Image 1: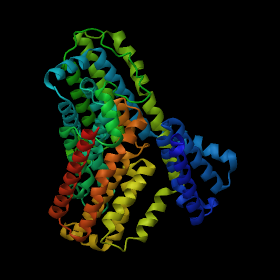
Image 2: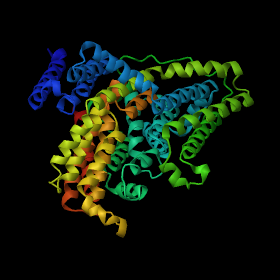
Image 3: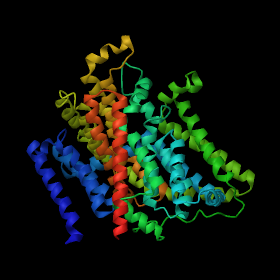
Image 4: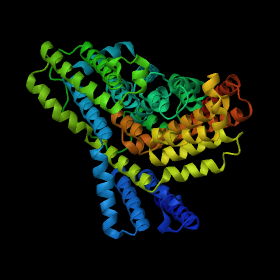
Length: 542
């Protein structure tokens, strides 16, 4: 009975949700109603229940296509036309998505080149001599993630490829590594003024200095700040709970994967033992520099724009693709010059690197297609209408925006799309207060708090969504089973989200950053120490 309990519960949840949808609107009016959120509910639920992400995403896509076809009366043929043409083909042909896929493949190639040149194994030997504990391995992963704050995609894949040998040696589970990567990707980028995320936020607000507004929101971005505190606490105290504890206990016994899907490409072993630490460090530095150059190039830096403005106006996808390809050419020339790899070895690495990224590419394409289905069903406008209907409760508006942003980001898998929908609503609600901003240059505190709540909720939902690009990238970087990563990370995300919710309630009454942030940090530390005490007591009882 226990084997089927989770499936029964999921089926009941879906049935109840469908009944609620039917009460709210008939299925023929699925567009712009509760029905619009059914596809991600189905996909995410199935992924967590079946532990199989590909079929779950595809069933969610078919659900979206079916709802859209029924709403438009296009029938069975219309459903497949929508899924294939409006979904799969449109997303694969999208220039932004193609840029991300190019960057993904090139990064996979660079990782294989570094491994075959012996750079990764040399770094592993160096790390073994300098990083002697599990605590050190986890903290090193966090520090490296914090240093690579330019872009979350770049962060996830680079940190994963560099730190895997170190965490494996110290028996840190792949699920824990994936969490450390994910928790220092988007949460770091969303509070870094020089990042692709800052550029995205700056572009959503009209009539004010977007970068200045982004900087003002940083202290009130409770989810990002508290997540960083939690990562440091967990790494230093070696405390874990819920499903993550199972994975960590198994890792200490030698099983860093816990469940199936342990087979990963093993065709990138070192060709010789002449590799040095510089063969890993220099390619990573080259990649970072070239990607930054690529991003500011797309923002007009070489046409006269200043550095900050160029970052704010950059095309992250094009910039990352451009920079990574340039870095790949330089890295190949470097390894040929060092004579650690032959030209044939370098060319063979291209196919091997592509092969390593195939699972991530497939999940990304399905996730993008599912997002298109929710977009066709107008999930965004539906959620927008809900928020606007409760905007009169201004004291609780930060909490409401935080919770709605979590739900929307979790269901759609996009934090950028979430705050792109919600921030204009906030500026509309506070249009009168913002009208004087152009003259005084001072943005009202409540506006900053509400926008911060949108950003925090968007990152929170994105952080635990199985169809989020960043979550997928973290799984790929850690070479961790995707469903394992999602299921072990969720309790940690919900812990921080609960404290944030209380913090945003306080912010509605006391619009003071020192009170709000101070109280939130104290509550977060209290919760973490309580978890540590409970975890130790359970361990002693066993």
